[in-house]
Length: 214
Image 1 (cartoon, rainbow, N blue to C red):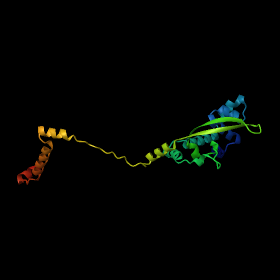
Image 2 (image 1 turned 135 degrees about the horizontal axis):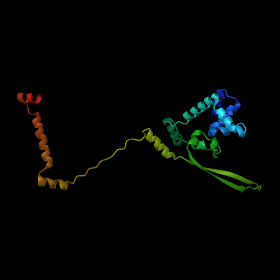
Image 3 (image 1 turned 120 degrees about the horizontal axis):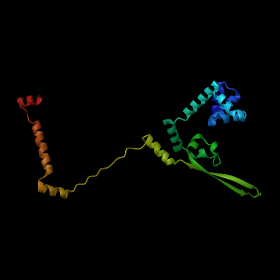
Image 4 (image 1 turned 180 degrees about the vertical axis):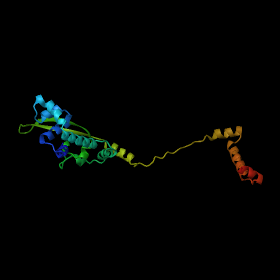
């Protein structure tokens, strides 16, 4: 909201108009926004409609909404950035100097993006002085790091191409048995190849050469 307020403050609006724009951007309810900035409930709807028709307010809303849409646009670079946060995260990003888990709001952006969910449990106990103490335990569920690394390796072609070994077995008994009954098929192929080679290499007469060149 701080960055949004900075953008709105440059549009030449009054403090009340700036407040209305910020409230309106929360749920796009002009009546509620008007009441939130101090207008009476019985005229909030009318005041909200009138404020929305103000050219300066319209311009401020357009700038902020365009900026928000651009920031929230899903791009290839943003996806890769999220993958990087999950794959390269460090445990120290989640704890303080004493090793205690940081509140989520105090974690860095890269650490927060690696969180897939969390659970909180409230515990109450009595200390040695008879005081009742309530603590909140937070359990984080992180995006699997190995899976993120694997996705990154595949994206950047980090794996070597797989090699497949093809094995072919020959039933020699069946082959010899077939050859004895029908002649040697391999020998027949060799003879055909040799005959073709001799024919192709045979000197041509002038008449044959002329016919082949036509």
